[in-house]
Length: 267
Length: 267
DNA sequence: TAAATAGTGTCTGTGAGACACTATTGG
DNA sequence: CCAATAGTGTCTCACAGACACTATTTA
Image (cartoon, rainbow over all chains, first blue to last red; front, side, top):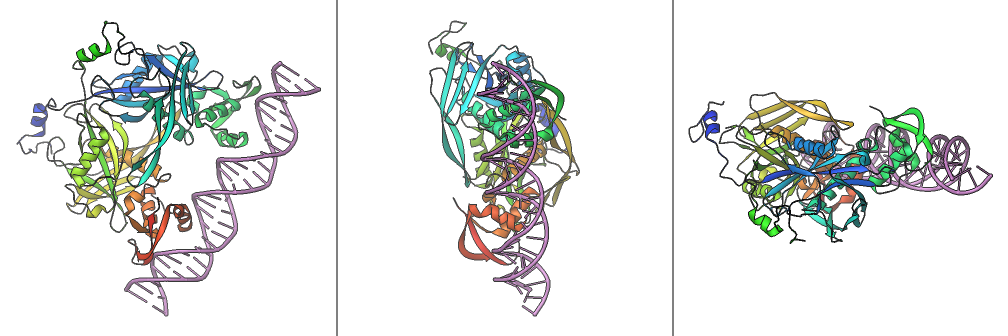
């Protein structure tokens, strides 16, 4: 019923023509992307950071990202930024959480829609950013770049939050080095990593990080990195076998120097 | 190093003083809340909708919500709206997803941060909105208000989407009645419900909908409503027993007229 | 050929799925 | 008193956790 008139006696068409949103304060909206990969030898995770060349947080490292433009979705903005930054397209990219603390950006009111991106062959990607080794332990998060010899560390405590009748455990980071991430990016990092871990057990996300082919020892190493615990070979293999197929070849494992059967993701 | 100067030779303080974001187009940002409860007799779910009295979508039903104001978080905005709408505070409220299609609002560029709220005693809550029975079946979503005799229905198809190397199944709704939800609120509803269902098995969300005390038949009925399938009594009881304690009384089940042991959520 | 890693067989415990049964309650 | 619902006992099966073993590969 587009012709129906409202309390101001306007039709929908008339309403839309006279509508202005100028009376509301509006936030800027950015996307920030946690780009995660794995080291060449599958011995650790890597995260892509960029060094800020502007105020605020000048010279600090930050997650890549940028403003969402009119006429694009946040997903498109994140894809665009990711392509600018790494040249990569068609990779895993998923919205995690939207951060809205009014003072999270000292410049002005800026909300951030956080995305998680997974890449394979991290070290081979040409990027304007810098790859950091990401080391997440129960009480510590450490980021280290050998390129610039930068070390960023936070210590982690668990705090209990209540939502309605139930309580959650949440990770809270406190700075442990002088060098730190810009803005609230450590919170985005934590939130994204928790999401990754929880989704990793139910979906085949690992294949987005493993490359086209891989050996089972390598794939297991990757699972262990993300889940933060050792897995039993037999059980791990029983779990992944239905999802993969052997290529027939044998290749060197990246986690060791031994030959091992080569597999690929099936379907 | 706040005194360090940037490429324009400004310190951080100087930069922030001269900073303006007026050059960027900015979206309006709202929160929309899916408020979910259960019918008095635990025979179905209920959802709170409000009838729009303005263009666009004049006279359509919509999820309650409103603009996020400067100096508040999206969570605070959602809480505020929820209190305005129902008088309720301190109830379960969780961010689900942020919707950013540029044309999702015909007025102007509006993003929506969707929240899921769970309430108990839905029918007793005084609200400016209207409670709809929510009926979610594998191929159909139906909303019905006996108050205004309004029926809104969509049919559901599963579509496969690819993200990186893996594929998901997604629910896609197509209108099946003349009366429909405003904006993209059916998508928010679906997304929130899927989240509810997936989280329901791991967290004790049910207790946010069940009320302070309940019988096991009632609690089981609630689980079956959300999960969309029948559960075995024995197994269900084995699962919830560690989370509840008996009050010692016997009360009438709401799902039948029989007496049954009364329980409450423990810790 | 020895140490290290790839790969397999199998036992166990836990928890969901399933069914059968007894106890209680309301009409 | 009987039909319906509350509540209990227990079997099965799938799967994760755990350990022990054999096969292969590199140094």
